[in-house]
Amino acid sequence: MNARRWEPMILSALDAATLSGSDDVPIGAVVFDPEGVELARAANRREADGDPTAHAELLALRAAALAFGDGWRLPGCTIAVTVEPCTMCAGAITLARVETLVFGAWEPKTGAVGSLWDVVRDPRLSHRPQVKGGVLEDECRALMVDFFAKRRSP
Image (cartoon, rainbow, N blue to C red; front, side):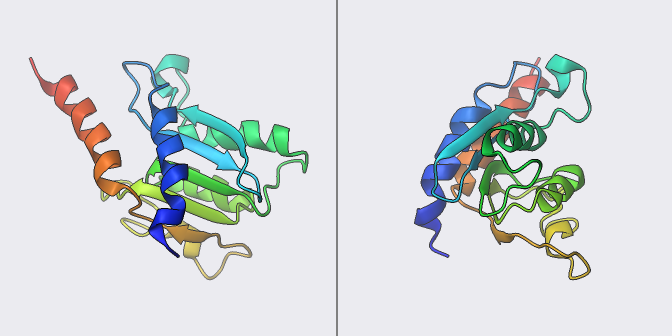
């Protein structure tokens, strides 16, 4: 898969990440239909909502499922995320039958798409999305580095 094909989607996810509140880690997720039309976008709202499940991916998947009209399934859809999904989000992406997962920065501490675990490519699952990681990785990583640098500075 050509990385340039996915760059506009990750740019949309980077834009979605700006919707995160000042206390939330700036992660953005955007779901596209099979023709590449945006269905939904979201940013982390865990702190803002006081909800441990309010990750950008889950919020975008929920909204996309409502918009797509196939119940909870998102066949043929693509989700673009600024950071490698965690186990919860990787599981939800798989269960939603998303066709393609594209992400920017790798997350060695919690990533579940190859870094720490590889939930989405587990051969025991009945559905495994295609994966393209590291798209616009530097830009996505910079967003995270800047956020945590500001939180740690006096």
